Image (cartoon, rainbow, N blue to C red; front, side, top):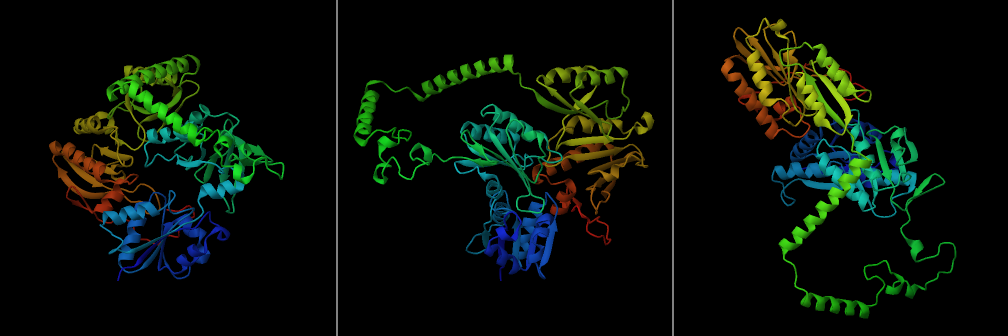
Length: 546
């Protein structure tokens, strides 16, 4: 018999704000699956259920495990804070089911149990900020392209929505909230009320009410929801209130209203509506007149309308660009990595002087263990910076979820036979966008002193041939070296083989899925079979999670 999937949103985390159905669903489940922090929040509701808790970025594996257990006949609770259908697990569970060909008639039973979303719980602590039209936008660009997020922020700002920003900032994502503020300030007053709510209805609840201009002066993290008012939102006695518009038609300071109930829906008393306050007869006359004009004035073709619109847009864009360039040049943070080469690890004085020049007083540079320097430079002209860096012999690479080659110094070039292969790999694949950042470690001799076996892909040149290691796990309590999958690979085969492995991972890897997780999930890469390298030892759970 098939089991059941209960996808539960348990609200902000306190039992007082958890629905009765959410509590009973947790108690009737055989298995509980969720992010470790969420499991801890419902600990008092658990009895003898099987618990499967994982760290961040393990959503896909949690959904897959839940479906598998339900297909075995178990009742499985997949838990999310807030509402399971708002940035929660509900959608992902359905996606995994669809991939398996699930139908409601023949597959496991699915029940999505709603909860109080973060937007609603945080709004209740701030006053009544989302009384009128509002939207939610996640600033996390791990799964959604930033270009699309940027468009959504602009559209919401232009349309005067009250905006709730989810996932505003993390230890690694710090620029997104700054960019969001910059966009919003183009359309809204700097004094627009803003509420910052961290851990709503939990032990560490923290609330700040500020304004759009000063909101970045306060602590904002992954547990913070940022609520930004619209043009009518007011701040009264430390409460954010967004009027719905009753003052247009009603008097709020008197018991007797200006309009009687039967008068309140008349057109003439709603001049702001679609009908513009006109009665049905006037509207019919307007329609007749418009129809008559249409018959007299020949309609423009689609091509003519498109050309006219394009010319107007170009003219407006040019005017705005000229105005912005003269009065307020766009300055963003330009991030990149520079190195002196794959084999060469020595910096020249001229290179160091150029670095100091381009970084200036406002930028930062950070030296990494991989013989790279990461630069973060505020600039409106990144092309000028790249030209200066290239002119002194630097190799430039992007930051983020890309291919990176880290090679040893080949003992100052004495063991140089493998250098051409390392340089060819770097030339072909450096900076390639991947599901998650990936490091290839390249060692020029069998000593492997530069630690290639501890990288996602390890390549070691030994006795004129190459040994290959795949899927090291570099951090966490279960960290391990890469799995040795091949030895004695001919030099003329190594570059093509690595290209095939990288291309397979790029095509089939899930977003944010590291290579070792992909290797474990699929079981084989380019004919190399996965073996569990996790150390078999008993370790007490770490307080900070996996």
